[in-house]
Image (cartoon, rainbow, N blue to C red):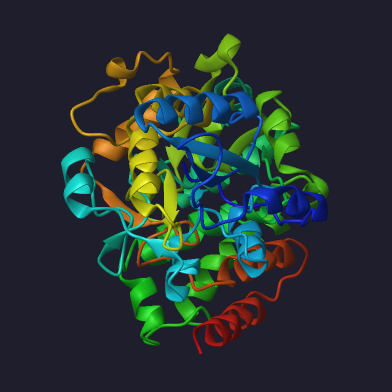
Length: 425
């Protein structure tokens, strides 16, 4: 589970509501039960019922655990967790956060490595400085480019683009046919950044998997000529009118509806979109990797996972047991596969073992996970050692929105370097 943040607007009411079940767990509840606070987030796919059912299933395997659910006011769990921490209410369990934002302050406890190695296909997918703070239960590709086959056919496009030149040609044909070539939910910063995530992951990380580590070592910069040249591709797409002119006003949820409703032909988005593919015409949708100049396949891969454990929990053993039970529950993975497009990464299981019903585009997309291809840690989405420094995600999102309206690519890349310096001082 990797769903990333919309900008948070803190709800004071929620802070007050959670005060009664403050972080640190501790004995409480009824009888011999131990209260654990659990920060989750709700989306159209991951509903309150999903969380309640998944909590109940894990509780059944961990006698004595009483879970007090806290719902983040937006999907930006990191920001909300920090607010709770500042008010002395840091949760005992935190769903799908970015560990690098909390490990430095000693707030998280790592999982037992023996258990991680025994249960997951890529046990090191989420490794941060040698430790695993979120079990790597699933993975996603961020982004893939999803496309409407019918709109492609009407525009005279016979196959999915395999390189950048073919991608531009497809955009031109789609625009000429009267359809918006590329959907963009630009009002929500994380969604606005998807084209940049694709471009930088494919053109920069695809040629140097160690680019982010080199950036930490100050060997490379965003302002370097090769990065500026790559990001200029985004300005080409904008300048050629391949997005809706009002894309910065389109909310993420509305961008899904617009694309699945046939108002746009392509949609660069994380593979969680697969959970939104309409069942009634699922065969009308396909996907392809973000195109590179030479047609080589680069897969911006992200190891997802479940929950982190607070190092401050009074009963950290029970908290970890709950995290283990939740992470390995087949019903949870089934729901995440079908509704949130998660690619399961638990050892010894196939899709059939989960009893899921998925579309062909899901199967085609999932195939990239098992293929021998050039997988890179998608910029801005990794929760391992390639995670961006605190605050850089927001700076990256801001640059994406700014570059939709302005053409100062070099200036925006310089701002990212300045933000990096500030974040790592």
